[in-house]
Each structure stands twice: as C-alpha cells, then as structure tokens.
Length: 423
Ligand code: UDP
Image (cartoon, rainbow, N blue to C red; front, side, top):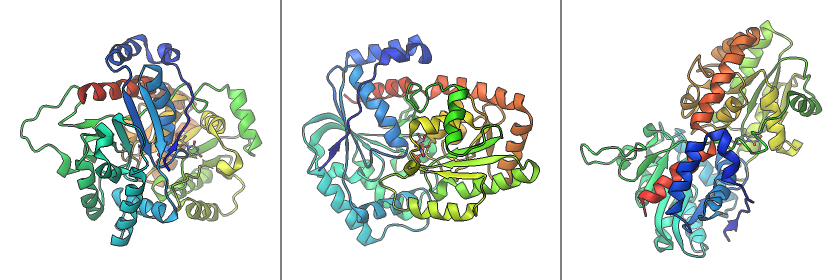
C-alpha cells in the first residue's frame, strides 16, 4: 500500500565547490559513525510542493554518504485529502477545522497506512500532518521517530493544533523551520534548559530546508536558454516580466500578485506577468483556485497562467525564474518557501510576503524586499524595474545568502547531527 519513491543517485562530491569544502568534510566525518543507518521518510505525496522537492535530493544524498535511506508515500483517497487539506489550512490559521467525522477519516487512513510499513528502521521521519498519526499504531517499527513540520504554524487554529499536539508529543524528536512554530505545549517545561548547538531543546530542533543547486530546477541556465523556453509559452522576452512560481492556493496569494501587476502596468504598461503553478496530488482545492485565478486575470493577454499540464516541469520553472525581472512570492502564510531560495540562487531581484519562513531568506532591502500588500509589492517592483543596478545588487547578495544557509549539503549535515544525537 505504501508506495516507494525512486530517487536515483546523487553524489555529495559534486557539491564540494558550490557549498564549500569544510561543510562537505564535516558531513563525511559525521557520516562515518552512521554508516548503514536505516532511515525511512514517510510523506503524503511524491509530486508537487516543497516536501517532495526536498526529498528527491536529500534521500539520494543520505544514501551516498553510507546510510540506507528510503522514501515511501502514504496512500489516500479523496475523502482523506479533503480532510488533510482542511487540517493543513486550519493549522495555518483558517477558522474552519476538520469535523469529528473528518478526524475519524484521518485516523482511519493513518491506521491503514501504518500496517503497511514493511521492514525495520533505525529512524522513521514523518513529514507533515497527513501521516503524523501513523506512529501510534506501529511504534516498534523504528527505534527513533522524528516528526518534520513543513508548514507555517505561527498562528494555528487552536482547535486543530490541540488535536494534533498529542500525536506529535509521541515522537522522540520534532523538527521545525522556526522557533515560533513550535506549539507552547511542546516547548520544554524545564526552566533554564539550555539550547543545544543547533538551538535544539529536548528533542525540538529548529532547522530550515534547502534547495539543490545541481537539480534541473536550480542549475545555471544561460539567459538565451531561459528566453528560448519562455518564448515558447508566449512570453515576449524583450519586455519586462514579473513571475510567481507556486501552487494555486489562497495562502500563496496569486490574486494579490495580479493586483500588484495591475498597479505596475498603470505606470509601465509593457510589463507582463507569469503565474506558474503545479497541481499537487494531495491538493483537491488546487483546481478550484486555479479557475478562480484564471477568472480574476479576466483574459488579460499579458497574464500567463501555466501549470504542469502545460508541461511546465523543472527546466521550465528554472527558465521562468531565470528570465523574470522580478520574482515574487507574495504569500500570506509560508512554512519556508523553497521558491524564495530558488529565485535568490538565480541572483534574481526578489519580493516576498513578510510571513513565515520568507524573512529568514530575505533581508529587506539587502537580499530582496519584504512586503505586506499588493501596493507595496507594486511599489518595490517598479523600483526594481526602473533601477536595474538595484536589482543586480539585491540578486547578488541574495545568492550568497542562499549559498551560506540554504543549499542541501547544510540540510544533510543538520539531519546527520540529529541522527547522532538520537542514536
Ligand atoms: N513548483 C514547481 N512547479 C510549479 C510550482 C511549484 O516545480 O508549477 C515547486 C517550486 O519550484 C518549489 C516547490 O514546488 O520547489 C514549492 O515549495 P515551497 O516550499 O515554495 O511551497 P509549498 O508548495 O511546499 O507550500
């Protein structure tokens, strides 16, 4: 029932000069003691969204340094995905929580998936809320269970988080993007506990995700190739382009991006907008929101709305991010926002919503701009479009910030530290 995901092979050595030799050496030293460690990643989907993006690189690199890592995806049906979408939205602050009936559906699918875990594992890492209740059904399947949270839990719906906390509390460790996401109930009660070297407190670890600089989505694409690809989607590559790459989801606020674009075009009518969004298999609301975004664009020929059904894969995302004069991620909630690091890594001028994990990646005015409204987004876009030198400066420092903090080898190193601590 659980589907293994095939991730292919990657070699840590290939990252040496992009991430720096000392980090690679640190990883080699840590992995010596972890050789043969059996690590299973469990997640809800192998396609669409940040979790899948991360695991396609992290899992093969874990294997390359001597671990025995696998990734399996739980199976669900529409009733389960409808429930977990409501849960996801509630945990990000939506007032509408899952009903008692839906919680039963949630638990039933978790129980079913739990019985399907085969083999024995040293560590099982459960990603996000969808499979979080699996552990209680089969605690003996692993010596160490880690829950990895990828979403923005800064202001959760109290009812939904209260129902989730008991599941999370059963884990040996949990990993969060930022400290503010850790629910009060999970913070250690021992007064005066000292944070560990990575800021960890009693099994609570704060670690940010990362992007793969060598993946087709992030490897360097020449300006000519980027333009060639965008041209095929109807973009006029001689005119300025604003772009947002993200799922069609109200938290990502594509409607706000269209508003910002409309403000911009009042002053610079030649500007175009591309909204590039894939449909995740565990996101039933995606199509509905895609259609309302299309309706909001109102047939404007300079708004290009694309998804994976238009064959927008990794290279195309890369091309749009590389070609855009301004890359936007105008989220209203954002766990981390891999798209932010993806854009910065391409040294593009970037504007992001001042929420969730985005301020970790964007220092306002230095590595990009942070905004809280479509008007602010339009204002910063116009500044960037009118001052190409400003855009270049922001882009360059953004790239170095990502190199230091948000490339996959750093993430691999942090996981190896957790494995070492919890052995
Ligand atoms: N993505 C993609 N195609 C799309 C839209 C998004 O490949 O049409 C990728 C995007 O490049 C990023 C991931 O999906 O790697 C989204 O991760 P992020 O953390 O930004 O947001 P999430 O979807 O997990 O909320």
